[in-house]
Amino acid sequence: MTPAVSSLGLRCRNLEKRFGNFVALRRLNLEVHPGEAVALAGHNGSGKTTLLRLAAGLTRPTAGALHIGPGESTAAESRAHIGFVAHQTMLYDELSAEENLFLFANLQSITGAAERVSALLAEVGLAERRTSLVRTFSRGMRQRLTIARALLHGPALLLFDEPGTGLDAPGIIWLAATLARLRDTGCTILMSLHGQAELAAVATRAIRLQAGAVAADSFTGEPIESVLRVTET
Amino acid sequence: MALLHSTGILLGKELRTELRSRELITTTLVFILLVVVLFSFTFDPTSSESRRFGPGLLWVAFLFAASLMLQPCFLREQMNDTLSALRMSSPDPFAIFLAKLTANTMFLLLTELLMLPIFSVLYNVPILKVFPALLLVLFAGSAGICVTGTAVAAISAQARMRELLLPLLLLPLLTPVLIASTEATAALLAEEPALRLDWVGFLAAFDIVFLTALWLFGEYLLEE
Image (cartoon, rainbow over all chains, first blue to last red; front, side, top):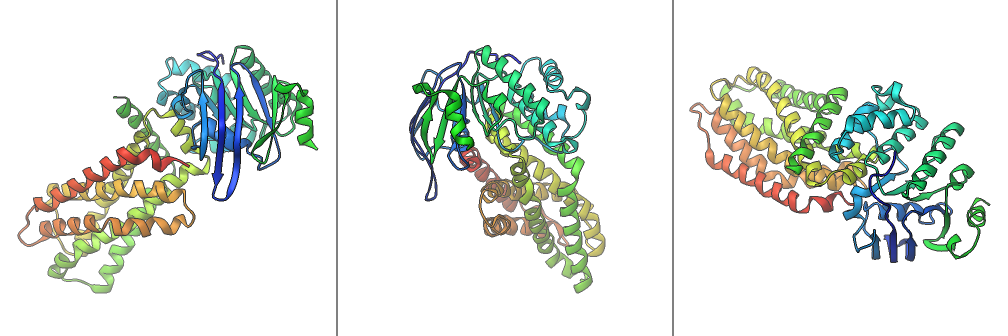
């Protein structure tokens, strides 16, 4: 599961997102450098999911800008290089594990799709259930397949929204090892976390959001554990 | 070519999921069957009455059944947020619409074709001689319903009161399709059948205009 292209950074300038009167992100200025593994922390409603969905190009900012890569590319223009794991599985229950992966591999015109799908199914431990319908899977199995879907095209930027959801202890350890391997190959990772020390250990930087703004950032010298620990209390 | 490639893949997905669940076709077929049979029992129409009222009844049944069928086409994508996955993976967002409206048109046409023999028997209206022309009218009318309906389904899926919003938006928009399809069908089922190319042309123009609008603005309909 090695990324096919070099890593990509992400820059937010005065980024703002409103939902009616609710301000989810307020004039956020943030730069994630290529190759960084950033853990996003914060209470529910602090803006983590909104930031990740903006970075994935799934929603537009109300004000400000978000650029991916060295130029002025928008998130929507960079989708081909982004792997996204959301709260929901983004999988079709009526298709098998293999059919789900083939659907997205074919849409993205991935060369050697058959080998890629087989390798990923083996990697996430679902090779024996490749022909089973997703609706027969447990939440943890679905999450593993969701992660496989996000890694299918070898993305240079990974956006993971609470990727440990539904995974059991061995699953979390597997995910942490996978993320560490991707980080070491130069992939940029931005992931929101709630606890899960194993996943936090992968991070090279931590940012805590509060009410849609950056409340703490380990980039300024504060230890990663400290940035993450405050959120857990 | 990229658009056709993506559309083909997505159409395959639409057909496969529907063939496994059979939710849309079954619902649509049962609804049309109920309307046609109930009206037949209620009015017990003669052949000449059927020729007058049958086409209108048929298209109203198709229209209401289509609104039932179109409702879940984007709601199903929201259940697991698969629409986001499609938006991130499809090189052209229009492919998502094109696949869905093609699948919807196929499902609606299939149910219409299954209903025609029952309509013919219950309402004593022969259709065999005009079947090829009737197929053309059914296709043009169904495409009009599905092009517009798929766009409205995408809008209503993101709104509150979504179950009410779709028919409220869709039915007024489809009034021209209903009139043109009914007139063209009535002309075909008349004692001296004729293919009214003016109404068929109107339906084709409607389909093209809405398809173009969907191509130009479809991406905005998919945004959160």
